[in-house]
Amino acid sequence: MTGEVEEYNQRQYALMRRALLAFERGESDLCQLINVLKSLLCALQCAAESWKGSFQEEWWTLEQVYAVALDRGQDPMAGENGAMVRQAVARLKDLVAENVAGSE
Image (cartoon, rainbow, N blue to C red; front, side, top):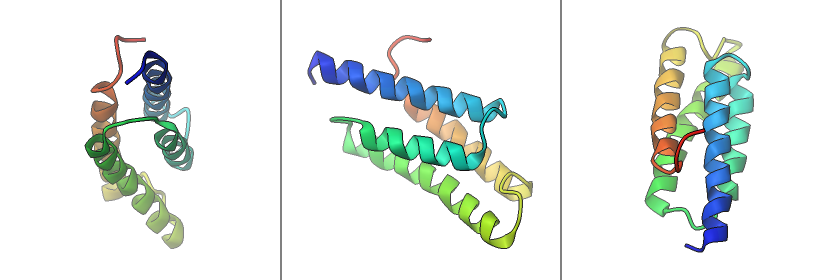
């Protein structure tokens, strides 16, 4: 991977990390997190397909929980849904951490 592409991807990973941390701190909601992560994933260049697949699986969990809760008029962070979201967010943070060079 060229230096420019790697630098570009590092910025995307850093933005993913920030979005996940902001969500955990209550600074954004689940809908915002889902949209930001999808956009940043699509923006990555030359990312490993296996990594992208793992990331998409966890992202899909967020999307499903949100969609079902919205359809049922429920809080997506309540009860079992909240536990599923927190688990997926933790896995997403781990996946992003695999690719973030250094720390912010």
